[in-house]
Image 1 (cartoon, rainbow, N blue to C red):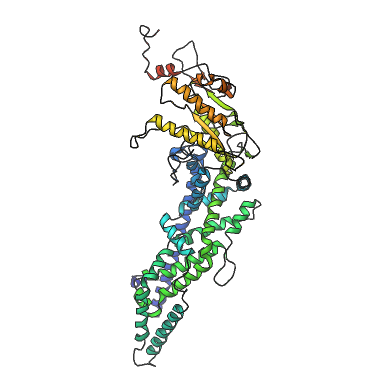
Image 2: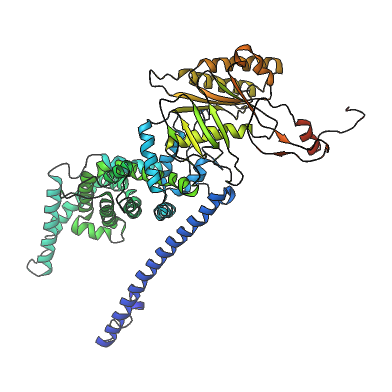
Length: 582
C-alpha cells in the first residue's frame, strides 16, 4: 500500500521528493476528511435537536424519539398513573434534551417517592431560571448526547470500580523499578549489539526476563486494561460536554457548586486539573494502552515492556483522578437535568415558578392545565386542595375531563417539587408525596382480579396518606383517586368508597376523587367535608344526533347531566327503537 501511495520511493531524488509531497498531501486530506466527517455529524445532530424541539412544542409524540428511560416498579405510587415514564410522558418530553447521565438524574428526580427538601427545590428553581435563556448550551448538550457512544451499565460499573480501587502494578514499590531496569537493559544491549560493541546478543537475557514478567502478570495487567477501557468513551466525548459547564460564570448557587465539583481533582504532578482536562489525559493514555491490540505488539512488548509502562501511566491517573470520577459524572448529570428542565421555562413563558412552602396546608393553583397536552388544546382551571379534612369531589359525564384534571394536579406537583416550571398561571403547595389510583389493571398471570388489584392500590394510598406526619418529617401525601371500586356492585361500592374516603379525611393528606356515583356524598360526615365541583358537556337537546362538545371548565356543585346513552347512540351500539325503548 505504501508503494502505491509513494511510487517513486526508489526512483531517485526528484521522484522521491514528489512522492513524499504526494504522501503528505494524502495524509492532509485524510485529516481534513475526518474533520469534515465530525463536522457533518455535529451539524446533523444539531439539526435533529431543532426538529425535535418543534415536535416537543407541538407534542407530536409520534415524531419525537423515545429515549431510554428507567422502568419503575409496577406498584410505584404514581409513575404510571401520572405518565412520568413511557410514551407521551414527562421523560419522553424531556429525556431527549440530556445525555445518559442527565436522563438518569431526571429519572431519579421525577420518580422520587418523597419530595426533596424545600431548600433543594428552590436551588434547582434558581438554576433552571438561569439556564432557561441558554438555548445554545441546551442544544449543544442534546447534540452531544446523541453523539455519545453507548455504554452499558455493567461497563460503567466496571470502569467506576477500577477508578476508585487501589492501583495494582504501582502499589508494590519493587515492580516498576524492576520493569524500568529490564527495559533499560534490553534497549542498552540491543543498541550496543547493533553498534558492534558487543558481538553476542546479550540482550536476549533481559528480554527473556521480560517475557517471564509478561507471562506472569498478563492476567492482572489485561484485567485492569479491560476495566479501564470503558473510560475511553467518556474520555473522548465528555470533555466537550464538561467545557459547556465551565463556559460561563453562573449566579445560581447550584450551578456554581456543579462547576466546582467538575473542577475538583489533581493531576499526578500535584497541579490543579479540571474534570475535562483529566478526561482528555485519560484519552491519550487509553490510546497508548491500545498498543496491546497492534499486529506488532509482541515485538514492541519484547523490546520495551510497553504494557507495563502504559498501565503504570493509567494507574497514576487512577490515583490522582479516579476518586473524583463518580462526583464528576453526578455533577454532569445534574447539570444536564437542570438544562432539560429549563427548556420548559423557555418554551412555555406563561408557565409559572411554583411556590413550595412547608408552612402551607393547601395546594392552590390558578389556570392549571396538563403539561403533556398540546398547549393550544390544554384548558386551565383554578383548583384548591385541602386543608386536611376537606376533599375535592369531582363529578361529571364521560369524556368531560375528570381524569385529566387529576393527572394535571399530580404531574404539576411532581414538576413543581423537581424544580421545574408548572403548567399554571400560579401554583403554591406544601411538600407533597403523590400517591394515586387512576389506572388499575388485573393480572391473569398473578391471579389478581380487577377488584383485588384496586383494593391493593387503595390500601397503598390509604397507608401513605396516614403515614404523613409533620412531627416526624414524613411527607404529607397528595392522593388522587379516579372512579374507585368499579369492580363490584353499586350498593357495596358506595359503602366501601365512603369508608375509604372517611379514612383519607382523617389523615393529614390532601387530595381529590372523581366519581359518577353521587350517592357517595350522602354520608353525613362526608357531606360536610366535600368540596363539590363538576364538568359538563354541551349538547343541543333539540337534536338527538347532534354531537357533544366539552369545554373542560370546572364548575361548582354536582354534575346533573349524563351522556352514556348518547355516546352509545353515536357509536351505533344503542338500538334506537321506539317499540323497545320508550
